[in-house]
Length: 153
Image (cartoon, rainbow, N blue to C red):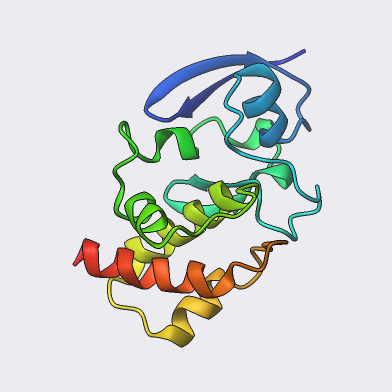
């Protein structure tokens, strides 16, 4: 199997894997970074969202072979102490119910807010569209994104 050096959460990590192995499985099975969740496997639900060079990306469809020079951030690397403004807002608003989708929701929201510091409700809805929450916590998610935006400004 080929060897790859990945830049994950500010550290170089060496892995051996088939070229077409999805990043999701490298994170979970090889590196024990299990905050990134498997949801659908076809990049439709958002549970596996990570940042690739700051861009929210579905890790279930990203092949390890194309990630050599990319900075990868997982939910574990978003903040050393869980104090990222989006994480703080999630706690303040008490967003999660089951919590399964929350890492992907937070990673999507944090990438969005890094680009748009003062979003409208419509922009928040558009940015978060495609992240599925089976518990239907969408109103709290939207509210938490707005609270996080205020914390970041």
